[in-house]
Length: 517
Image (cartoon, rainbow, N blue to C red; front, side, top):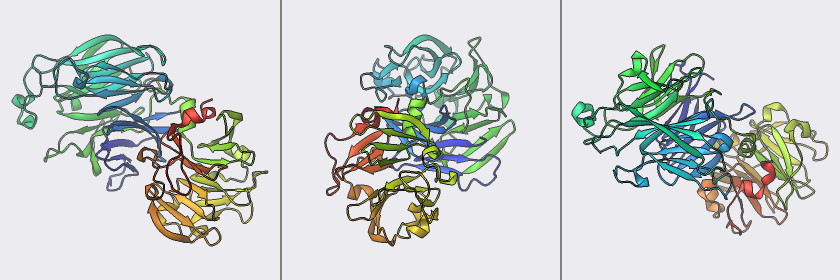
């Protein structure tokens, strides 16, 4: 995949480097009030891609390019870099404050695993001014960069730290193996160049770490330079000449096949964090546009460096739609697969099957689904790819009149929701309710026309927390109350009041363990 993916401001953006016009991204994901510090792409065992992003006190797993927030893990502070470890464990580099004292606020490498099992505790290891992490699948090693003293403390140096992976359930999950001193200038940055006048009293520190695919090398950027570390010989050397002397490289990536380098520098004239350009080397080029760039990666992976999203995590994070079956069990639709789970225990019933093996009438162009609901006759209605289709519950075959355009069948849907339906429900009055990214609308079942006004989801469904939006799916339980799925969480709300019902928000993995089996 010859795309670059960048983080900056409130957005993640993807572009084609071969396209000279970057006025409009090929893909963009935005979250209001969020600050994107890093993004990288990882694959699951089926080849599906996920954007792993961090910032704003969270690490997010986002389906790429569908843009669903599939998992949101609280990081207890700012994380400037994040990566995926084995078994779905997440790791982040938290720079902390400017303190030089022996406190966690001075920076740490943090491992997040409690989202996988509540009996497991998250873990951290102090590393001053920690800014970058990189998982090395080949050697089962984590690399991290920071300093051995606070960023405003004289006499310190940059540090490259090596950790060995011990295991999901081990304490600690990572073993500190060795620190490699990274030579840094002993002078404060503002005495080296007027470029750093805005950072009085700060010392040179590492910022990013990026692998060179097909080799055992990786690049490390600092405030003043870029160096290369050889993981075989465990030695530093200058980076390629075109980039070795560049100041303030905030993020960089090397393409897995062409080895072209993409990087972002802190180079705005007004001092803002998001650059207006991405630079390319080997061959050299520059692109401007988008909404500003802070980190940049290639939207592809290298199995010798990158951990694979495990099948258990992939199955739950690819949830696209849900239905309540006639036997009272829940049916879950992923990107390509379908599974039935017992309503009471949440355990899987039978095998995981392909969607089209069960629902033979669904055409390929409707997958992955956007939503599904049960009609009053007990047959499911599917929404996907701008199309709408009724299938027979018992045979899985399409019912007449076959596939139709959503816009024709449901003219009351606002235009911005027609291609972005996140969930759908059949109301007690027989009308359809549609959920978009942020908005909610009721449509007449017979005419498809809108009933009332378009409202925000949380205006109607007051019990839904913000971290569950946008939704992944929804279904009506046998008691007539909706169950919502989003951000790895599950919640029942009262149909009449919109408020959350006890026991409140729970992890999907805890309520529906069959999705992990």
